[in-house]
Length: 139
Image (cartoon, rainbow, N blue to C red):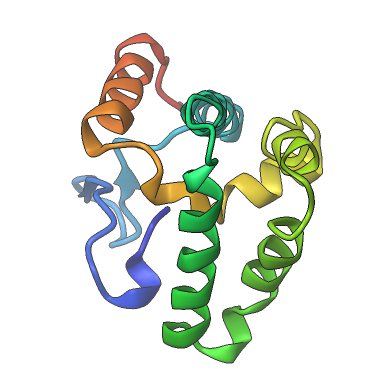
């Protein structure tokens, strides 16, 4: 998730084009389809990680993440967090279905997934690097 709204660098590489306005371009820009595909692969890995734990501790971690976000985010940004919080009260099978939903609802919800701490940084970066190596760039 790009965090420029929180005044921290988002990791996008911004460059100015010579002789153009200061609009510039993002050399690391991804197509929405690529971002959605990457999010679905990450969600599949999260599901596998949670299901490997009989206690389903990843669900509790996601609930705690939602509680934390409700404390630190402005109220204007609470809607997706509250939506996830309600989903996390459902049985695991239904939560799993939402995480793996390839439709618009699944894509939208994965953009604000509270499962961000379930995978280790190493697991997450491995997936991101695989996508980076295989993705064409946006024109």
